[in-house]
Image (cartoon, rainbow, N blue to C red):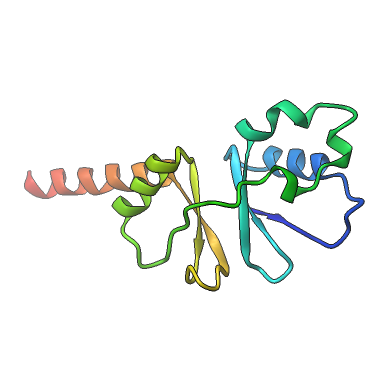
Length: 130
């Protein structure tokens, strides 16, 4: 799940953000441009103060409220490495991209997904020992 940026500057980003958050299990999500490149991340904790401001919110663009200095993950990266990046950046999710140079959006990985996978692996290892 991600927020696509279109050239329609008059679109109310608040409505797009709220719609995306309502249909997502995450509190943050990547921002992807029309070329399918990750250009940032919007976190609810960062935009909450302005999201419901009746005067300011209609004027906001995703690029106004997103963080551009972000960590990303790659398909071949270990879960441990991705989790370390989440800890360092205090992020719930990491965008998954093909390479850091091209930043082509593939998907997201969440802290919850990683922890679930670790639990499954731990249970499988425990079952194999018994």
